[in-house]
Amino acid sequence: MSAHHSDPLQNPEVQQGSTLRFATAFLASVLFMGAALLVSQHKLPFLEFAEILVGLTFLTLAAQATLFFGLDISRAQIWKSVSLILTVPLFIISVGLTVWAFSSLYSRTMLPANEVPSMSMPMDSNATMSMPAQQTLLQ
Amino acid sequence: MATIAKAGPNTRLWNAEADEHDTISTRTFGFWLYMLSDALIFTGIFASYAVLSTPMNLAGGPGPAQVTNAVEGFWQTLIILGSVFAYSQATVALKNGSKAGVAAGILVAMVLGVAFVSMGWHDLAALTAQGNGYSRSAYLSIFFTLIATHGLHMGIGILWMLIMLVQIVRFGFTADVVARLLNLRMFWQFQATIWVIVYVYVYLLGGTA
Image (cartoon, rainbow over all chains, first blue to last red):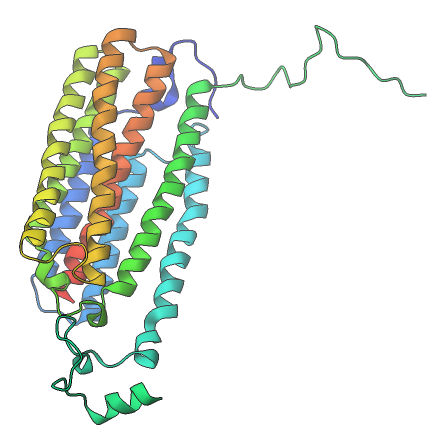
C-alpha cells in the first residue's frame, strides 16, 4: 500500500494517469487485434493460426495490464501485480482442465454427429440409424 | 515475574513508524480482488463455451461460423477500446483537478459504451428473430450467456458512470469520489480485457474453426 496523502488527487494511482501511456495502450491493442483479424482472413493451418492468435492476445493483454491498468512493481501497484500473477494460472487451469476432461467424452459416450437425427425430427419408424449407431445404443 | 501492561488511552497497537493507512489504495486493492473473482465467472463461461461449441451441441442449429462476424466484432473491439481510452482520459483530467474534463471523458465513454451494448443486443435480437434464440441449442445457450454476461457488466458500468457524474457535481473530488472513479476505471478497462478474449476466442478462433 502506498503512503497516505491528505489530498486525494495526490494519490499515486491518480498521479499515474498519463495520456501518452493510455494512448499507447489503445493503439497497441487496436494494432494487435487488427493483426489478428488480418490473420483470420488467410487460410492457415489451424494450429499455426491458433498459435499466432494466442501470441497476439498475450501481447494485447500485456499491453493492457501494464499501460491501461498500470501494473508494475511500485509500492502502489505491486500487490495488484502479484495477485494477478497468482490468479492467471487459475484461469488457465480452469479452462484447460475442463477442455481436457471433455475432449474425449463425446467420442466415448455419444453418437457421431452425423448419426444423430435432427432435434426437430421425431424418433419414429422413418428415422433411420446406421448399424454402428444402433450397436452403440444397444451397448 | 513478568507483568502484564493494561491497555490504556495511550496504548498503540501498531508501528508508529510504518506508513499510515491509505484508504484509497486499500479500496482500489479490494476492488481489484473482486474483479479477479469476477474474472473467474467469465473463466467458467469460457470453459463451458469450449465444451458446448462442438458440432454435437449445435442440434442442427447454427455454429460459431454462422453466428459471428469477425469484421463486425472488430468494430465492437474498436468501440470498446475507444470507450476505455475516453474514460482513461477522464482520469488524466482528474489528476489535473478538472471537473469538466472528467465529465467530458465519462460522457464520451458512456456514449461509446451504449453503442457497444446496442450492437451486441442487435446481434442477439437478430439471431432470436431468425429462430436461433437462447434455447435453440446448447451452443446458442452458452453464446447468448457469454455475450449477455459481458453486456450486463457493460450496462452496470454505464450506470455507474451516470452515478459518478452526479457525485462529481454534488461532492467534488473527495477521497470517496476519487476512490470510486479509480475503481470504475479498473472496472471499465476490465471489460475491454474480457472483450479482447471474447473476440479472439469466439469471433476469430471459433468463427474460423
